[in-house]
Length: 79
Image (cartoon, rainbow, N blue to C red; front, side, top):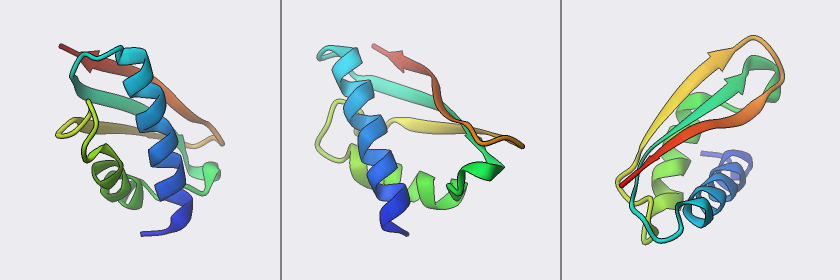
């Protein structure tokens, strides 16, 4: 785990939970470019940590790895 991925995961969870407006978040899909310097396995681990105690606790993180520099939340599933 690196602080880089943890900070990014926390930002994603904060944004997703705010957008969910009190509803439970079940799934988050992100697009991570190989040039973004974000390690997908580290992001998965950090995402689970960042979700603890939030509306996203237990949410599944789907990662779509691309060749570019992007780091983008593509979608979220709430209930």
